[in-house]
Image (cartoon, rainbow over all chains, first blue to last red; front, top):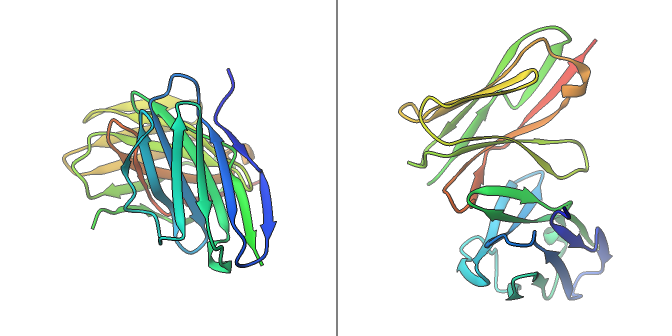
Length: 111
Length: 110
């Protein structure tokens, strides 16, 4: 079975540019999560969806961050404008009945 | 503030030795997760502990949960080099929205 698929795997862009990260959850999973991992702050939950509806976005750091889930098989996390402090690994995860599976992550570097 | 605290954060072990990683959590969740992460890789699910007294074992790793003490442990038996990785515990509800500890970086040396 295909796992959680994220793209791109790596992204390097300049400060001020818009960044869009993409995620395809495991088919049949009803929850989708976006996490961010940095050395300083560890793994943080940014936002999660249930059946495509955002449930809790209290972890989203600022208004520059937005996430959407237009259908059950696709989600995006957008940063506009990007800043160097947004550099991190962003993980998407999906779950069914509490079994949580992570994608390979997107390593984002903002110069 | 909801917190998950792991200790130790760094652990250097010799092959063949035993050791325990501790995870204290502050929520009333009765579900505790353990993950492994290799450098530059994703998180691999090791265990999901669902109830007080739960114990699960896989190979040289055994995890347990004490919900009254809000404590989970990950015990490593007769460590081997392949176990070198960072281990995370995470507290979460049935939905899977997880609060992670800072991780324990384990290095197993010959």
